[in-house]
Length: 237
Image (cartoon, rainbow, N blue to C red):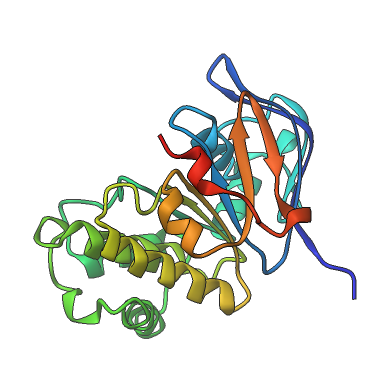
């Protein structure tokens, strides 16, 4: 059976504003894969994630994500792409003026959920999945960094997306909590979701090997053919 392509970039140039950060990117990611994007700070990891999510325009080359042409994203298509894509941010981006429950309720209402019973059931379901159901009435500032990241993962999977993009999800967390967050993302992958995780935590991902894209010197090296057999220790500062 032929694998279904979720992400396909052909000779793509990735920009951060007017600065070219990754040139001539050729990458195909198939349904159900778990892929790391690694590299030093400033190497283009976040810009790649933001381009895949439609937050940054693809200025040159070809790019297809979940069947959407990144060059031709109209407002309606961008909204559809983002509904099929869950994004996990390093800086959480939770609404600080409302509870965990209200944060998730806001997202569901914004994406067209109207039935209150169905909406409530979905929120309880995703919070249970990340082990945070008992914290649904807490405010974000009452949670630890790891707990907030769990809520961000819950928010990312609310609409049952086909693709999860995680941008440095363990960047501000201690090693033990980072392990827990990575475990949650891998559990999502086991349900069939494609996960692309940007990170420079080489020690963590070195213990949990998977296909890896390396951002270095303005290019991307793909370890797919070597099945992720890379010496992460060589990349440590």
